[in-house]
Length: 381
Image 1 (cartoon, rainbow, N blue to C red):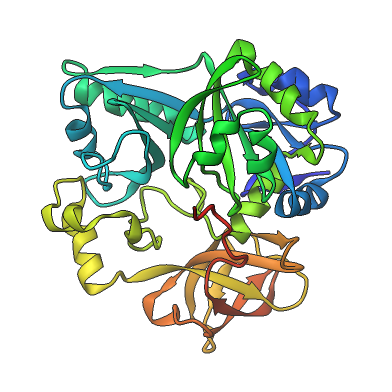
Image 2 (cartoon, rainbow, N blue to C red):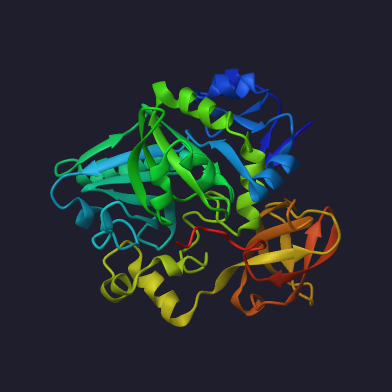
């Protein structure tokens, strides 16, 4: 049976075609995970409980995700914040110590080369970038700053995400200091005597944490957390359905070099100072779109009935004219039906607009809806 996750077609386990395994591979196999190739790694698609169960458990309790395939990069040296800010849309100079910020690498045309999280780790900038883009991002940084900054890709580190409304109380039993972390704040601490860096963030729409730990200690941390009552492992399938319900973009699908941050609904990540000063690649287009509006917009799409609308499905207006395409779609377990995101012409982006979806030669009725499909539950303390 083939399974589609974020537009990626994956069959059964085929580790021979995968470049690498994460340091948590043995933990996944021991837990009965279905392993699939994804972004060059053997990754768990789901565990015996199944994708829907894992999804709903995350929304109600807390789940563990292996996100070690993503890139962890450190940048340091004189003027590191000013330098990085010249490549991204976000305010890096004003980023306070142990605070984190979501931003994007952009190109000269205003397209998104990657989206990332930047943390000011007491002067050293820590970047978490997408798995498919991490080597391109590293090259981009090294080519630009090779003579002025120190840049390291941490292939020796794993990344574990703990997500869900009970994530904070569960992690606090092992690391009490997490209770003091605000949303998009980070700190170094110890779990069972092992030094880790913890960021209060995630990609499910729920409260949660991302834990960076050296690879040789990753299995120990994973097993400690997995043994905690109420915590269950979850795979790529649930991660994708959770982020889709939360209206969060996936690079290579909802955003790429053909989309600008404004079209993607990410203008909120560009601060007032950066809008005033510019100075980032593609600023002319991006600032123009902020002022005058983009020609197309990312929107939520709610199909009628039970048939999901997958990536690539055409969106038509009531006159039968093509006005856009779906970029992410599937079943939303918390919603109880199909949900999707895509881009439509700006004139078709108004909430409540009736549209049609061309699925397998048939037109499915749908409407444009406000994102997210499920309210975000990030920590507000």
